[in-house]
Image (cartoon, rainbow, N blue to C red):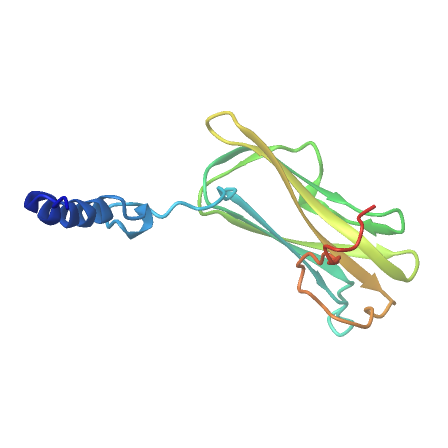
Amino acid sequence: MRRTPRFLVVALPVVLVAAAFWLRPASSRPDSAHATVEPTLPLTLELQAASADPVHGLPPRLEATLEVSGDLQDVSLSLVLPEALSADAGGLETGQPGSLRAGEKRNYSIPIRSKRAGAFPIRLEASFRLPDGRQFHTQQGIVWRSGAAAPQGQHHAGAYEWMGVPVDEPQP
């Protein structure tokens, strides 16, 4: 019968413990920064619908908020409306690029009018350029209801819903 040398009995556990400390995940190392899965844009758009306020004489309106976390150049905003809606876009006219500085926050109140009752998709689009030359295009949308009740059922707070199909059923 063959015997294992004594130094292997002692050295093997020491090597395994050292390898465990050396190969630990980067997130558990104190000097590592937490990386995100995807980078965030330096411009945040928020779009909300505000109902009419007859007491103060205010029509229904869209409340748009822009928050900037980095310097932006050639910022262009546009409001995309269906044919049945009209709005006084004010400072959101297309073709007026501007610059925004880090930490800047802008609020827009846009009166809207509807030609008929219904649910209408509204989109706020923004395009901008970073100081290093990269260009981006982003958008935020909502469904505005004029004289139409919200549909019955679940509300998923803007999350996507995907219908599940059992694996054993054939896919088209």
